[in-house]
Amino acid sequence: MSIETAVTEIRGKLVTTGESVLIELEGGRIAKISPSSHQEPDNDELWIAPGLIDLQINGYAGYDVNLSDSSMEERIETIRLMVDKVLASGVTSFCPTIITAGYEQINDTLTALRLACERYTVVDETIVGIHMEGPYLSDQDGPRGAHPKEHIRDPEWTEFTNWQHASGGRIRVVTIAPERSGALAMIRELAREGILVCIGHTAATHEEIAAAVDAGARMSTHLGNAAHLQLPRHPNYIWSQLSEDRLSASIIADGHHLHPSVVKVIARVKHDRLVLVSDAVHLAGMKAGIYKTHVGGEVELLPSGRLQMAANPLMLAGAAVSLSECVQCFMRFTGAELSEAVRMATLKPAQLLGEQQIGAIEAGYWADLILLAWDKREGSISIRSVIKRGKQVHNIQ
Image 1 (cartoon, rainbow, N blue to C red):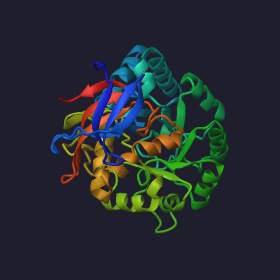
Image 2 (image 1 turned 60 degrees about the vertical axis):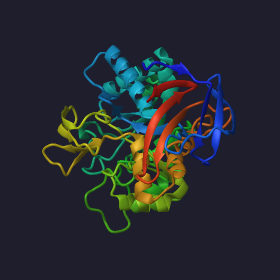
Image 3 (image 1 turned 90 degrees about the vertical axis):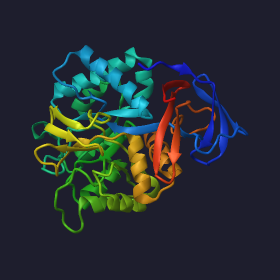
Image 4 (image 1 turned 180 degrees about the vertical axis):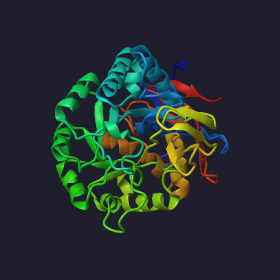
């Protein structure tokens, strides 16, 4: 893991208010926030933001949550190393995301996540929950996305509870297609357990989406993606989710998964119910080049962060940018202020998970913080330091 250094105080400008402050830390928490008279030159001034919270990460920096054909020790080590890289990107809490697979593969992945959390404190503190994105999804081409069709199936409560046991009770987000047989009953059970139920990878009708929300679904998973290439003008499952005021929506604002105009429209419609996610795959954070993967075969990662099929560059092969890059893109696409974009990657996901001690900078909250440089004219941010529960886990001199 990265060398960790205890931090007792930090100075900078709050992203939320623009106020220059001194933040004092004690016992891994924010002890006191007070105005600071210490002024830095404008070009060197750092901004203080809550650590980012990503509800959907499949992998990062070459490490894959859904590693297969590997020993349990290899899986655990992969998770440990991935957490280290995710922290360095400015994400201090995240949901490792399980994709559709056979029963044993999913069970082994959940077991590895549990064991990694039990073995390493920083892993346990950083993994805020597990997101199950499958196997209870649409089997139609388009909505299914890259999920293997042979493992797509109807939801089954006993199967899920077995997986929840393997995870040590860590599954906190489940994406489900509400049109599948038994989906509404499953949504009701998941909601009763306090799990964030999301609609995604779906070809549901307007009525089926409304029924899912009535049953307890609260968010759309990467709205606008995993869809047919052609849809009825109206209604369709994108319009229906957009118009459902009870649904929050997550989006991948990387500039590749959604056109900037679509990001802008979704932002205008969802307002305060919008969450930014990376949906990063294991090639995120890697150098541009050609890679061979176990899912998409040969893929190409461009310098822009676009990950595409080598044989068909028009087809995406996953998301390959960090959440901080999505925050930057969101500001450029919508004209949002830094405070608004950061809130969609901190406070909003924390609220959806019911987390009350992360996602904001307040006395008593965990000291999960990032220091960043912000070039307002260029619309760019640069992570300079990452603090996890009062310890500096990443720093750029």
